Image (cartoon, rainbow, N blue to C red; front, side, top):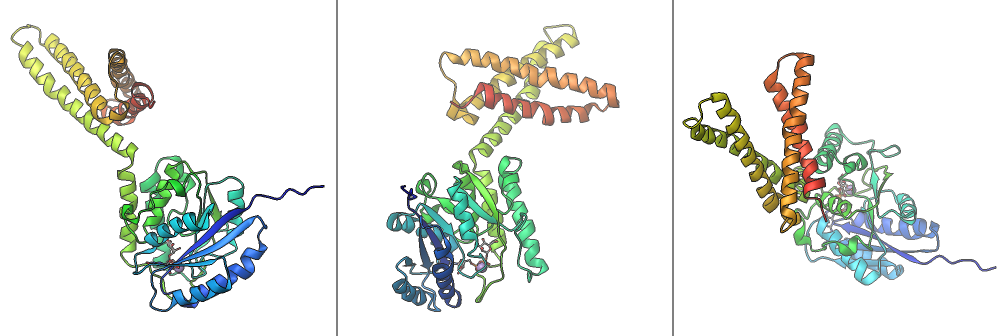
Length: 397
Ligand code: GDD
Ligand code: MN
């Protein structure tokens, strides 16, 4: 009987180092003699250390071991350029020279237990594209020795980053540990499509984690977290600086701010604001124009508002079409039909639904007109318009 041999796959453990001479030798030995031999034979494992010319001689230790183990490689940066830049250059090298199918982000100080490697490979085998180690799910943990301050920063900082980047979408619930350093990513479709030029990073320091997380998930990676028991450092010192917290916050904010959806929503809000002004100012102008011509004040007010409302609808449609949804811009023969649909939907979302709800609320809780109006605008008209615009009027092709 023929036994089926599984196709070989290559995974590269990338370890960035800066002054890890007391750790890196032990780490390489551990991986090569304990972790790798325990894996299924289909895995072709490599270690790629990206060292920033550490003054403590980290590079020499790695170089020596790279002669002992053929699958250990050293890439040397001439100067200290940050952990983020080190990983990007490592990804590139792993792809171009080692034919990587998967790349790991792995610290060289034993804070990431090597025992997570087989667990993560198994998940990749199961078809995931992006697997990260989480300290916040069942089975994961922070080091016992961490003081209040570090735990506080990790917990609050992590949550703020998570909230800023993903709330209220699926990833907010899916990603529990956005700043984790332990990851594995599929090369095909993800690393090979990524911008690996470090100049595109908002920060070359630890905040890059958030940027890559955001970009990889944006590419539609099938994502999973596995528990990470984050250990205490074996030897040497952490390279995290006091400005790192601010850095991480800024990156999270920028990722969200420059996101296409955010930009769209902001433009939608500005256009809506302009529409509101057109409605109020236009109402005034029409009233001034109509007053000398029509006797009944109630007719004047009603007519003035109807005209001003239509004007604001035209303004909303025009600016949203040219600016907010410029990528889905409506032109030519479909313009009239879409504009009429837009008018009809404005009537429903801007008048019919909110007015009915306001009447209902008044009936139930008494006369708090202004409060109800505010509720109606922010909880009904705005979300409903956003929905209708995206799903009906300017639906993505
Ligand atoms: N090449 C290079 N250049 N490597 C660096 C640099 C650098 O500028 N800065 C740090 N490293 C290396 C370290 O030598 C170590 O192997 C790894 O990157 C992680 O750095 P640590 O200094 O040990 O970071 P940490 O343990 O305090 O931070 C951990 O938690 C962070 C946030 O929760 C790490 O897991 C981070 O990856 C994680 O983002
Ligand atoms: Mn560390």
